[in-house]
Amino acid sequence: MAAVGEKTTRRRVSTSILAAMALVHTMCGSAAAQEKPAVSKDIIVTLLGTGGPEPTPTRFGPATLVQAGGLSLLFDAGRGVTVRLYQLGMSSGKGIDAVFLTHYHSDHVSGLPDLWMTGYMFGPFGERAKPMRLFGPSEGSSVPNGVTRIAKGLAEAFSDDVSIRQTDEHITAAATQIETHDFHGDGVVFDEAGVKVTAFAVNHGDLIKPSVGYRIDYGSRSVAISGDTKFDENLIKHAAGTDLLIHEVFATSAQLAELPQMKPVADHHTSPEQAGAVFSRVKPKLAAYSHVLHLGISSDEIASRTRSAYQGPLIVGEDLTRFIIGDDVIVRKWNPELRRYPD
Ligand SMILES: [Zn+2]
Ligand SMILES: [Zn+2]
Image (cartoon, rainbow, N blue to C red; front, side, top):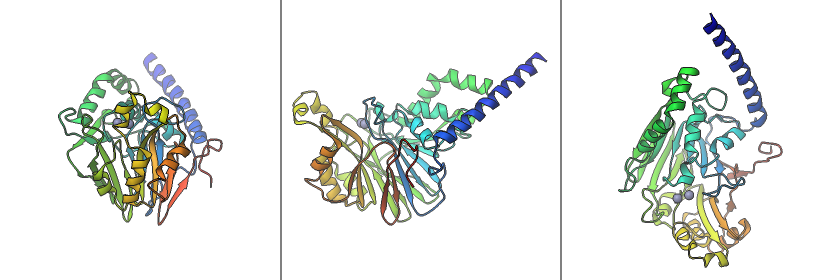
C-alpha cells in the first residue's frame, strides 16, 4: 500500500509541476510563434543562435530553424538552442522533426545533448515520443561516421539519465533513442512533405572535414545556409538563385587582424568583402549574416565592408530574427519586452 501511496503522491506532485510548467511556457511563448505553423507555401526561417564559440548572452551558438510543409527542421544545435526554442513557445522534443549538423566543431554541437535530453522529458518543452532524427556528414578520414559516433557517445555518456528517467518517470525507450543518418558527398539528404534538403561540401579548411552547407527547397521557395566556410565556389553553385542566403562572417578591427593568433581563425572563415562577392554571384532576394564573429568592430561596420562588393538586400542577423519567405522575404525582429514578434 505504501508503494501505491508514494506513487499517487508522486503523480499528484508531477501533475501540479507540469501544470505550472505549462502556464510558464504559455507566458514565455508567443501566440505568434506557433509550434507547428499552418501549412502554407511559405518557408519560415528563424535564427535561434547567431554567434560562434564565444559564450556571450547576446549571440547564442549557431542554430537555425526552418519551418515548411508542416515540418520544423533544425540546422546545427549550438549553445542555448533549447532556450531559444522555449522563448518561441516551441518544444525541444516533439517540436523538432529532424536535426541537421553542418560539421562537428563544438560551437555547432554543444547544444545537442541538451536538445536531446530535454526533448525526451515530460513537460511542454519535451514530450518527444519518437527517436530524435539526426543527420550529418560523414566523409574524410578525421571524422568517420559523424552522427552515428555522436549518438553512441551521447548514449554512453548519459546512460544514467536515460535509465533513471525510463524507470522513474516511465519515459519510453523510443523517446531516448537517436535515429542517425550519416551521408556522403553532395546531394539530397531529406525529402519529405515537399521539403527537400540538399547538402553540399564547403571549404572550412583542410583539417576541418567533413563540413557542409544546406539548401532547403519547398515549392518555389528556398533558403541556403552556408555552415562554416571560407569563400567557396561550391556554395555559390548550390545557393545560386536562392531566396534567402544565410552566410557566416568573420571580421576584426585592423589592429586585431595583426595578431598572429587571428590568422588561423581568419583562414577558416569568410570576410565581409568575400561574402559580398558571394552575394553578388548568388543574387538572393535577401542576404543575411549569422554565425557573426566580429572582434573589435560593429555590425554596422560588417555591413559597410560588405557593401564594397555587394549592393543588394542585406541584414546582419540577431538571435530570433525571423524571415518569412513568400513572394518576397519579410524580416521580423523579436521584441524581447513583448516576448514576441510585433504584429
Ligand atoms: Zn562555427
Ligand atoms: Zn567551424
